[in-house]
Amino acid sequence: MSFHRWKLIVALLSTVCFTAAQAAGFNPSTSSEQTELTNRVVRKINNAASAKDPIRGLRTFASQYRPNLLKRFLTYVSYNRQSSETEQITPDQIETAKKLYAEIQAMGLPVTLTEHHYLFVEIPSNLTRKVPVLGYSAHYDVTPGIEADNVKARVISNYDGKPIVLENNQVIDPAQANGAYLPSQVGKTVVTSDGNTILGADDGAGVSILMTFLQTLAENPKRPHGKIQIVLAPNEDVGRAAEFVEETPYKPEIAFDFDGGSGGRVIIENFNARQEIFTVTGVPGHQSYAAENGYRNAWTPACELGAQICPEKLMPNFSTGRDGYAELHHMSAPGGKVSMAELDIRHRGFDTNVMDQWEKNADEIAAKIAKKYDVKISRKMIDNYKNVAECSHPKALEITQTAFTNAGVNINIETARAGTTAAMFVTKGLVGAYTIFTGQNNPHHYTEWLSEEDMFHSYLLSLSIMDEVAKQPVTCTK
Image (spheres, rainbow, N blue to C red):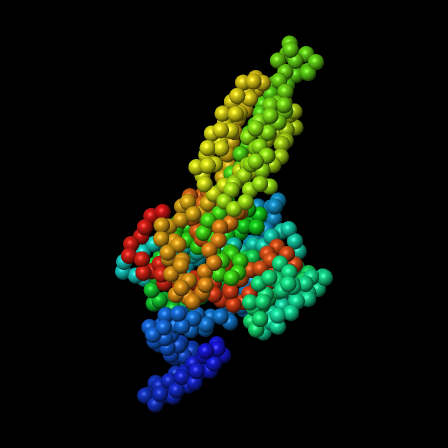
């Protein structure tokens, strides 16, 4: 049944109920009373539909929020909200956070805006038994790497399957990589920018989904659920989404990040990313009198160290599938001191045990080279992000698969040879979260576009996952 036909039926039934109420002596004269009467009708029909056909029931229930979802998206992408590589937080992000804060407050939900502009919402459980604490996240900034201010979104209803020609010599072509998903959208609604900026679906779509999810819970307080925590983060597109997340009480036991692509994609595993910094410290002095003054060159041992711990076979060029890599990314003289050499190594892999063994071998090689050249060598390791699969909830995959089935959405499970917001959160001790598709395509590009249907399906998943977590008998630890 189409959404428009559904609205017509609801309107007719509401009219019948309104007339019956008047006949019974109840005269809902105010618009608020009439609205409440209509909502009662909708809820009763939804409950009856859900009991008979769970998939159809969920979709019918969710469809009433579908127009709000698209309206929110178009509003949010109109906000200027770029993050910055050089500023702690941009004024545009601060303004966006304040607008979202006010919108959540207007829903009547408890919301916190932290010092560093994280938005946190916690909705208490309405169950009588304990279930896992569910966490959802998204980010409200957009990349600073391309024009993103003053977005002029274009809504294309009933897409005809042809190339979409934008301004600025931009074309989204179904025959090219940037439009490869478009053939599945024929007859449906897609959204683009005008071609002079990005669209901002990354992650305006995720924020729209979670804000509509919050509206849904605010308006349906009796829908069963456990404790739910939601965080909206700044600075994700400059790699700092997790920087101050500890300012919030966000500590879910099972979590999902709404910042993925399209086509039912769910990222359940990703690279671990470590930054390995080796510092070789020599002894300054005049080279011509090195035999007498103790001068020790730092760069010869540094080059030898880099060649041995990052051999050709470990370069990214030869890494595919589940293979990791260790790349000597660059070398520098800390503080301009030529008596010191710093090696910055980008270390990636799915298996922490394999990565730990590389570190052990690297330390042994460094010790031998330090002794050979009579220099000091130290290593510092920084976790940039971690593999969510190594610390996700033990039933996360089962719950996700069941939720997709119950929502009538096909799942496409993926691993990522990169990081995610959830992977950054793991470095702060949080549970590993799967990344859920939101309808984004071609992020960080003028040809970025959104599948409205996928965004709606992702919103369906937010409800279906909540429903499934609420069925869990006990809270499991990670």
